Each structure stands twice: as C-alpha cells, then as structure tokens.
Length: 300
Image (cartoon, rainbow, N blue to C red; front, top):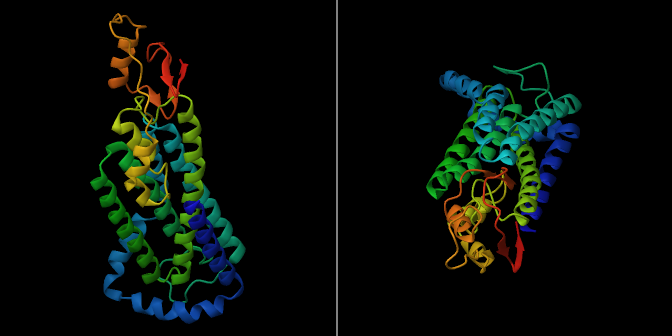
C-alpha cells in the first residue's frame, strides 16, 4: 500500500510538470533560466559532451540488451523487464516531445530537431540504472554491492542531467519531469513483475535459481525488488522475511533408501539445488518426483 501511494504521488508530480510544460512554458522559465545559467560553464563543455554521449538512449538500449542476455539464464522475468521498460521509455519520450513541442534554450550547444520536453537521456539512464541496481543485488546477494550501485547510479544520473542542462539542450524542469517519468515507469514495471513472481512462487516454493525455502538465499532473492523501483529500504526489512518463513520443513523419512525417488535424495538435492529453477519454472527431470509437504499439503 505504501509503495502504491508513493507511485501515485510520483505519477501525479510528473503529470503536473507535463501539463505546466504544455500550457505554462513561460512561467516555468522564471525558475529554469537562473538554474540553467548557473550550470553553464565553458571550461566543462568537453566533459559534459562526453557524459551526454555516454548516457545517450542508444547506449542505454545497448546496455539493457547486454544485461538482459546476461540475466536470461538466471531470471527470465527480470531479463525481459530490461528491454521492454527501455522501449516504453523511448515511446513515452518521443510521444511527449511531439505532443508538447516545448522550445529548447536559445543558446543550445547540442540539440535535436524535436522538442525540449522531456529529456530522453535522463529517462533512459534512470530506467536502465534503476533496473540494474536490483539485478546486481539479486545476482550477488551482497548488501554492500547494492548500496554501492545505488550511490553510483545516483551520481551517474545526476551527471547526465547536469550535462544536458549545461549544454543547453534542456531546461531544468525537463530534467526533473524526466526523472519522475522514469520513476513512474520503474514502479509500474516493479508491480507487474513482482506480482508475476509471487504467482509463480506460490505453487512451487522457488525463486530465481533457488528451490529450498529453508535457504537464506531463497528469502533474499524473493525480497529483492523485482525489478526496479520498489523502495530500497524494503531490502533491509528482514523482520518480515523471518515472520514469513514457513515453519514446516521438508519431510525426510528416517532410514529412507537413497534411491532417486526417495525423500532422502530429495532432501539432498534441495540442500544443493542445481540451477534449474528459474523464476518459478522447473526443467523436466531436474528434481526427483517425491512429494514435499508445504503447509500441510503434499504436492509434486
């Protein structure tokens, strides 16, 4: 409920700035012009050009495809979220540029033929980095990696945003609205993929690459914000995970034989699961077919 409320507020703020850019462009210039002049420095133009080229939509699209290919064997739902969300960001960017057609600053250094609102560089950079942060945590499982990637992503997005303003390609209000639009896309994608992951993990108790619910790695993987935008503090709420852990452990019969279909062999395979369970999908013949009890109900 809290994440939904935050998403509504972000979407409302993005909509408000969009409407203002469309119908009250001159009123926004009262704030935009002083900020733009403060960021314009001729001695940093070369650095700003390099930053804006590194954060271009083309670079973001290529990075999303590479990351999706790397994540595909581990978590297909997460991998598919990368290119689809980037494509949605490009579609929103081009549509708003054509509809609003806000004029760019007069002293533009690098610009395009389209309008100024919104900032496509910032949208794509925010979307891609917002997806890669939880992906890195999901793969590594290290909170240090998560927070380091968060700080690095914030610095990179701020650098791209500053470069677009310093080069005169966009107004500061364009940049702010673009960040809010990207955050709305990320939260929307987070709710859809997280709901899909919950449906998949409700029947077989598995998550990305882990099939043993008693393993800490399982609970860490399903607690990661799949994919992006869910409040980062949710990663640290271990109390909820401890309360949600099932008390019923896998049933292993004492003295059971070590055959391929025995409970003992099932227990051994669940302690060291092979990477065959990807986001709720199981490969044929991956685990023995012995029933496991979950919540008092046996299933295969």
